Length: 148
Image 1: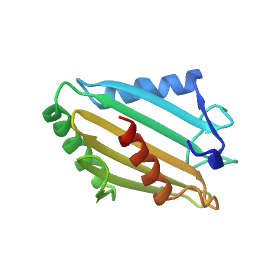
Image 2: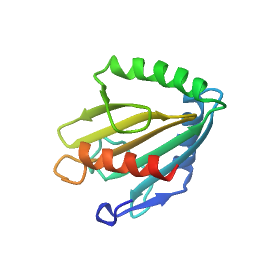
Image 3: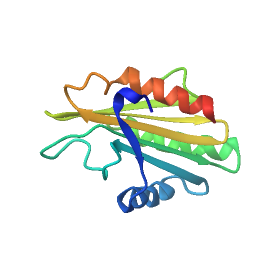
């Protein structure tokens, strides 16, 4: 994570519960999940609450084959496109971007397939934070693909 975001990995029970949900999202694939929060605090709702904090959620899943990963990617992509997600180029073998906004917060999620790997990265935080952007989310996703 870029130092400017001031995010630290959180290993608390809330983060572990989020990981359990993620593992059900990609059936037949082995998931890995990381939560990064402001100074390591517990994760909070990304679009609501009295105070909105910057957060990043990074997940990846190793599938038994690229065909299995592609099948899951197509299914999930079709679901997220029903609420406005768009296809983006330059990240993995295929990627979609979903954005969410409230009066006080912005959230950007990129979901992609790269061979037998499925992954996503969500960056969210206060509406006025210029580091919470589509460009920053794409940068973080590309870094995650390069590390894989």
